[in-house]
Length: 512
Ligand SMILES: Cc1ncc(COP(=O)(O)O)c(C=O)c1O
Image 1 (cartoon, rainbow, N blue to C red):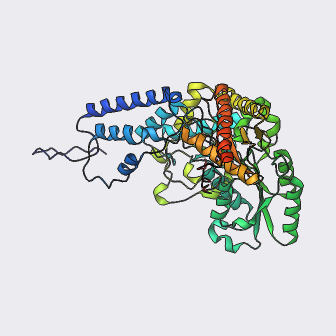
Image 2: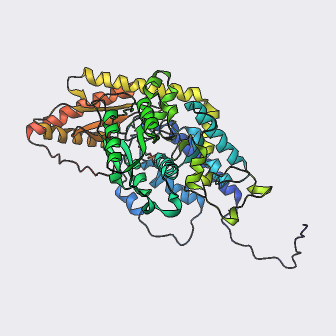
Image 3: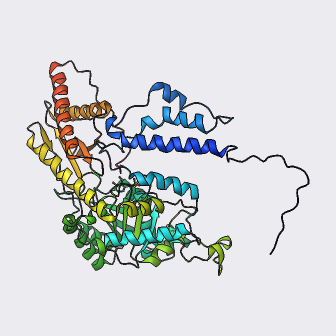
């Protein structure tokens, strides 16, 4: 149909939009932003890992809603002054807290380009859909999963765990659970995971209506791997009690110690018991890239689903995770949504058969795949494997350095990239906990390094999780020397009885 543009007789008043009146000004500010970002990344090693947000900055960050705009230059100046210097620290080579990726620089620009294109990657005939499909294929290749495996990118592993267990619920429930809801279950459904399993799995189980008590927490051995015999007994006990076991959740890298459950044994058990095997491989699944780590992950390709993050050990900027589901139809049955306004027509934008929005909760989805695609093209998968392998070596190196120091001790086995250790001082266990907590706070506040905190067998330890492509071996030498120095200093204060070291408050916000 041909439409002609109506002729203007009078000059219309300019209509407001968010586009600049002067595109060149935006271009100048944009270039300054690029320069600032590149400078910031290039010089990251020279700055403290972390510094607190000063009071004047906090005050400005509590100012009320601006009614009038100030333009891009002033806004960028505010960002440089009040936001950029006070990051979380994870781009720094000596950040090893929780489990966070350090960010591949090309990913920064990929996110910028993704926002410039601003597509909705829920579905539709567009390049972004093909890019995400290609990225999923590449990830399957990297993990040696069959090509027909279903998959989707997600905001992170919490969401990926939820999606996997949602697909599982639809497949395993003996009724239409999406339609009738969990109260229609003829028998209470139960799930099984080790007591070291991440809190996001618990949240997923709760959100899906199973109830966290129905997630049976199975004890672990001295190696923090699930006790498979105890797991089997728990399944049999529940069946005998008239309940319906539906899934086992295994770990490929527990958050606390990096333990990898015996996935092969779990796959055998799941097969025998006709249960769905999901694996939370938030960071550990990608250790498959390292040849030497493969024996520990044997069985990974036998799972029904695996969730893992690309913003952890693929080093990409937050946020991007992935879920792979062996039965691609089960994934869609878990989340598909029909609506007239989304009908697929024979051509045009809706013609593409892939509907990512039918594989997760999200309908509008950002172009997360672009940073994965660009990073893999820029560097090649082998470089990721090499750097991940170096992080594994660094974990072993740190553990050796700690073992070699009479004042320090390794607190748990180091099967992967997580090293838990403690300063040995203190008159008793309680004082030793206080000393290690104080030590960690001083280490973080000095900006020297950022390990995080956890408890191993009830005792406070420093936890170093290495998913950092910028870390060098000398960074770990520096860490050990600093920990020993601070440990002696605090112990001296304790001994002198002159300590002004109140026990730091440990806010329990979960094991993220
Ligand atoms: C083992 C494990 N599972 C799941 C998660 C949750 O991942 P995300 O923070 O990307 O949602 C984490 C986060 O650290 C984790 O370590």
